[in-house]
Structure formats: structure tokens, C-alpha cells
Image (cartoon, rainbow, N blue to C red; front, side):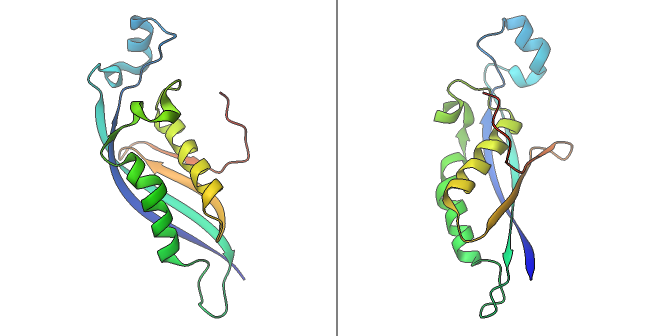
Length: 140
């Protein structure tokens, strides 16, 4: 029997949406107040959905402690209370939540092997959330 598990995690981070290849006016027109030179922050809600066969001996898709440990060590410790613009992944890319969502998916895809990664969903605000299921090449 295939089952799905979604686990939620919270973190806070700041970023500035700014593209060095664009003029100051183009950045302002594109990103508005999110182009503030001092940046701005969000309290993000990360949802990780994995799937797999339910282990008959444990009754679980994967060990929650292993999933939590991986997410805390490989994701939350890297991004919580950080300026996303300073992360290596965003040295040449704009740290939009769309891009952050794909980065987090790639980290999980590479490192968490106990269950199949179905998707990553990242809620930036009550009004904005982004999902990435993988399978498509990143456009950069």
C-alpha cells in the first residue's frame, strides 16, 4: 500500500529581490517594495511530502525522526535566521520563494532516500505559496 506523508517545518529568513542584470528602475518596477536595499523577512512554512510503501513492521512510510533530523540538519540550520542572498545558491540568482522552493527540493532529493520525495511546498505569506515537484530542469 502506497501512502503519503506531509511534514511541516517553520523557519524565518530575509532576502532582497534584486537582479544585478537589471537597472535600478527595472528592479523597482519588477520587485516593488521587495527590492528594498535593506531586505525584508518572512516566516516561512515548509511542507515536505514523501511517499512509499507502508512498512508492515513499523506502520510508517518513513521514520519521522530521520526525516526531521535530515530537514533540521540539511535545510533549517542553513536557512533559519539567515539572509538568503548570502547563500551560495543565490550568489547569481534572485532568492525568490520560487527559486528557494526548488533549491530545498534539490537538497531533499539528493539526501533523503528513505522515501520518495513527492513535492516541496513553501508558504511565504498567507497569500503566497509555491510548490515544486521536480522532474523539470531548472531554467538557469
